[in-house]
Image 1: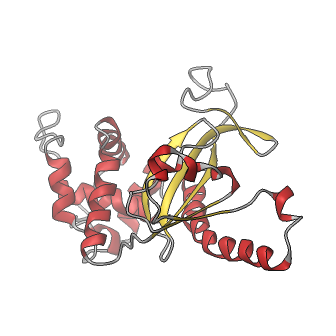
Image 2 (image 1 turned 135 degrees about the vertical axis):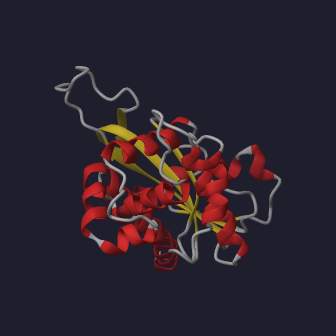
Length: 251
């Protein structure tokens, strides 16, 4: 990761928001705290666990360019994460990483897969505020209701790399918000049926839509058409890998 991540470009995106001084003390160097934040994401660590890991695992504080006599505590780690959230820098950094992947020929744009999953939120009101998370809502998947938020993503259909994300409490975000506009083919489950009929796609005859049929319709298909549905599913499975990591990180 030291060689692959475009650290200098990421630092430039954050630098204007990073404080020069805090409580009369100089903050940790931005390159160091950005790397600490990245390690936290790589290993899905909470703030206290990240602080402990910096003390206990030499490779981690070495990667961040820090020494044992001055390591960031849990408050510093939390404050930096809140800084990124406050200024919407997570999306900015995400786009910058994707830009570098594309420059290196690792981001393919011929085909896209769109899909959604539900990130569950705690429904209990037994907390300091006595309320549920205001950003979470009742949302439905199939015939079941859940309390949480839908995360929808667009990924390339070859490597499964994510290039767009959206969160919503609604059933389905129009596929147009998840696509980059240069696709020659689009894969999606039955929830995206009819997207190809939207005005913005009627003019694009070069796009081939491979949207799964509804379960009731699949039961009536002959062998040839059923094999076509299996082919669509074999491509769409790539979207499950980022969903698996997302659920491990947030649930």
